[in-house]
Amino acid sequence: MAEEKNNPEVEEVESIDTDQQAADTQAEADAQETVEEAVSELDQLQADKEALEDQVLRLQAEIANIQRTNARNSQLAERYRSQRLATSLLDVVDNLERALDTEIESEDGKALKKGVEMVLNQFQNAFQSEKIEVVDPVGQAFDPNYHQAVSVIPAEEDQDHNVVAQVLQKGYILDERVLRPAMVVVTEK
Image 1 (cartoon, helix red, strand yellow):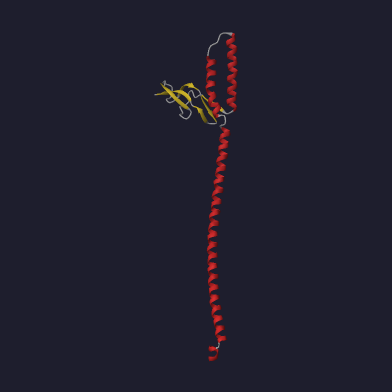
Image 2 (cartoon, one colour; image 1 turned 90 degrees about the horizontal axis):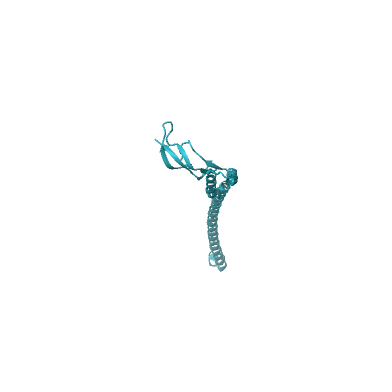
């Protein structure tokens, strides 16, 4: 046994075994560190993936909301497409109606008045086709959503208060949207 201890070959084998064990231990430590790094990287990638999936879901929901809003806006735009034109033509209709209220005695004047009537009828038909309705609330309860009170008069004995007694200027609505409120005189107690 003493020979084995002093034998350089045995010492060399023992040294190789020790070096091999140290190398194996280092390799195991390196492998463990690599595995831990890979697990850490995998956890980070998993967290990133979940964050991206959440972001995708949120963006899909936002896109769906935008599409619904656009569809609703398109429907409203289609529904009220004639609002601006109708609003600008209301004064024209008022003037045509005033022109028809004048008394004419000459034949030329009567022919002209007939032409104005025809033009007014065309306007009224065009308004009707676009669902534009006249607000003419005589005798109805005053509604500030559709009427604009410009004056008040005392109610007669058989009349209720807060009722439209007279219309000074007709109002118009387009699919329940007020284009112009009716200018009215309202009764009061």
